[in-house]
Length: 159
Ligand SMILES: Nc1nc2c(ncn2[C@@H]2O[C@H](COP(=O)(O)OP(=O)(O)OP(=O)(O)O)[C@@H](O)[C@H]2O)c(=O)[nH]1
Ligand SMILES: [Mg+2]
Image 1 (cartoon, rainbow, N blue to C red):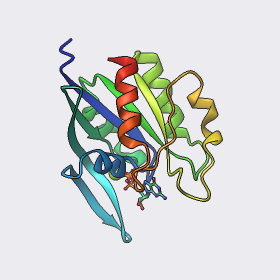
Image 2 (image 1 turned 90 degrees about the vertical axis):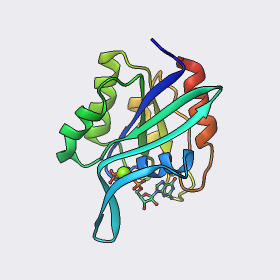
Image 3 (image 1 turned 30 degrees about the vertical axis):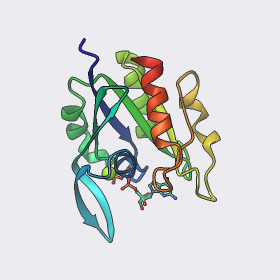
Image 4 (image 1 turned 45 degrees about the vertical axis):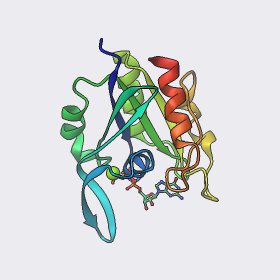
């Protein structure tokens, strides 16, 4: 495998902060979203890029709504690794469990990024069932907390 460029796909439930995470890593990232009652929601994909340790990292964000399963399938083709973004202000949800199980079964390197840790309702312990042995840093995609460091560490561990 050519490890000088990596395709990393960002998964997670609706509203978990996937697009915000990609924006935090790449302020020039692109997003295909629609306005859903005042809240932007991804209906296509997010695309961001960065360079870490001379390696080109391409970040592909997926839509979190259940009905976009087919889009997640298309975007995940050829991925080298994945990051599952979890909203720690909400309980563990079925889609997050399903995604973690699928990544575990396929053997793709992945991490669970525990997002919204700046929020007063944040409780990362809710995700214990899916963090077990995987790298699971606490981050805040909008406050900028730990996003780049967490991505670097994930890459160091697996690539
Ligand atoms: N407090 C807090 N809010 C966040 C954080 N990250 C994202 N949000 C908010 O959560 C909401 C959803 O963020 P998005 O980045 O659009 O989430 P998404 O996972 O891409 O959503 P979908 O594409 O619709 O599945 C927005 O209102 C963000 O401002 C965070 O770290 N802390
Ligand atoms: Mg999104």
